[in-house]
Image (cartoon, rainbow, N blue to C red; front, side, top):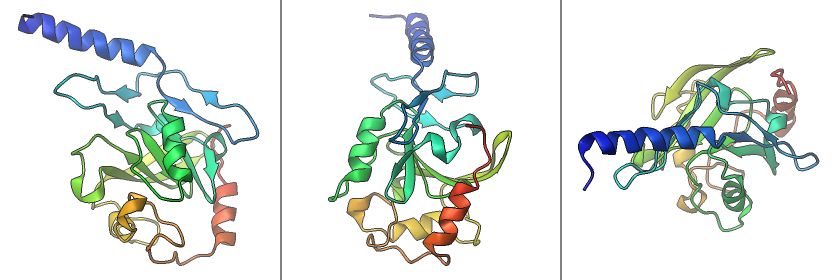
Length: 199
């Protein structure tokens, strides 16, 4: 049986190993190979133990130019824990599914959803919502959280996404049950293409 000091040492060793493995990955579009980001001091990955589920805590460095993410229909995905394959499996499914922890979903550069560990936000399927400010230097998190985060139209992000049919795991698309956005795809495409963050 381990003493409490040995358990604490084991936990810190696990965190150090996880961080050093470079689990933070951003992927390019399907026409070019994925770009791997090295872990930084601002990247936080929770340790896996019997009592602590795997979690991913996003930082400003998490949010990159949309062109570095993987396009799926009209939105973009990546996975902060390197589990892009499972994220894509759900995103591309015709039957829906539950996104894995670390999934990052964005329609436009200024808004994002990040899948957190089970229990983080039960009412919101464990998604954390973000409103972001971007420029040629990178990303600034303006607000983050659960029900309190609002989008550029002053609408509560979680309320809009809660309208999605359960099988879509809070992800809105035209046929998922969510209300239509007040702007068309042509304007959304202009906003997506205007992402000025570094490539």
